[in-house]
Image 1 (cartoon, protein in one colour):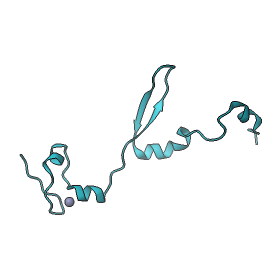
Image 2: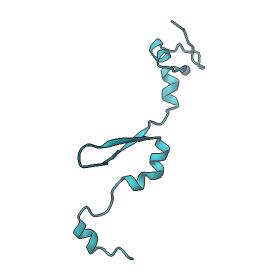
Image 3: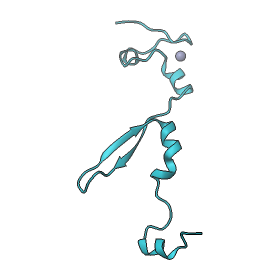
Image 4: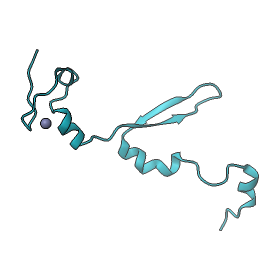
Length: 83
Ligand SMILES: [Zn+2]
């Protein structure tokens, strides 16, 4: 088994090395990497797909993913949409 030391001098746990990391858990927590985000895509009546994207892409398109406003179609029509 390969022994890897982090840039801070700590020993990197073997499980982390196996997973391809070269930094220790403390440094990893100090510099958090943003998790990928996903959204549900309903392509048909049954089932759905999950689209996975980077956190940055998600943030840029957040307005399009999160429904806002009235849920009811009647309320949507009764609102003045042209103003
Ligand atoms: Zn470290």
